[in-house]
Image (tube, rainbow, N blue to C red; front, side, top):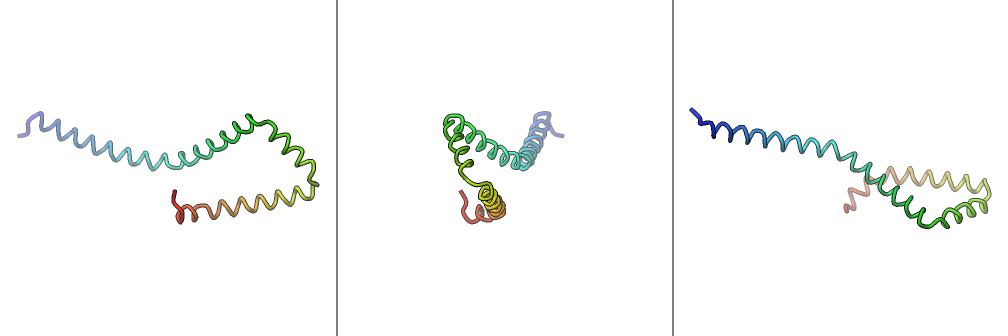
Length: 99
């Protein structure tokens, strides 16, 4: 028959193994949130920089006023196509160039 100490030690080992499995499962569940939070942090850094340099907003407004509306729409279309391409290729590039 096992002693109480041996039973407690076995129970402790089972609980430790269960904790390890739960931590691994939690790490997998948190991974998409981590990616999203990184994107949010980048956006917040951009907002902070714009706040520190309000002249950038004025320059952007003057630049938009200087460009004709037709040109602006073509730039926006080109930019959105470039963004779609970047989003499509980024996962492949991350596999090729880690870090």
